[in-house]
Length: 255
Image 1: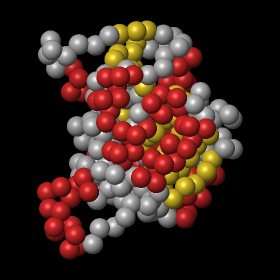
Image 2: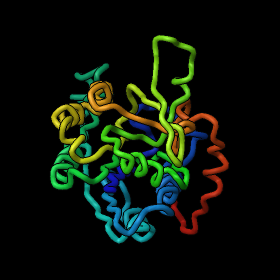
Image 3: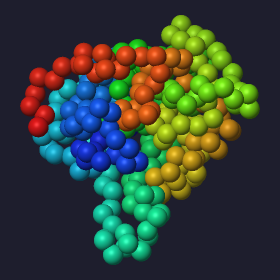
Image 4: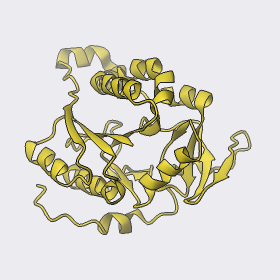
């Protein structure tokens, strides 16, 4: 598996939603990082795509990574001048986040390694210990679509117009999903089938591309979820995420 771990120490979220329990981003990103480490294999590769991160934090991320194959790639988000921001007005939230550098990196690697799993994830996603092995297991069973580790509470309202299929393997039940955030995984070959659409959307920081990609290739998430987005209103249901978060200790001074 190749993991693209997007890191930024800014307290403000991309969506301007409040961080879960108003946690300090510098602490939160460290605990989320440590949550994926126990079950990374020595063959896994981690690419830290960073922007606005202190050197001390980058050094810590590399030192605590459980695989020797870890790389740092600066993926800066251009700063928009105030005058331009005023002109953009209501569309500012979409125009001010540009991820073309990251998209080009994913394009290059998925083209080079079409049989590997490529997992794009943000630094504010907390994982259960079994999340990474469970995701890998779906591909081992022959699945060629997309896989995410998290679930959302709004998928469980009673709406007969929304249907899904369910499968089961040694780790979990898995349901089909129509969309999600941009944090998702697929085989390199599958990414390449949609890379033009993905790169177009990276300009505007939009995750609307997942609707089209998933309609064509399919996507699965576990029930219950094995990861969560740590922002208010987005917690994966039926897991005590506070207990999971508090169980991860930090030995360094992250401030």
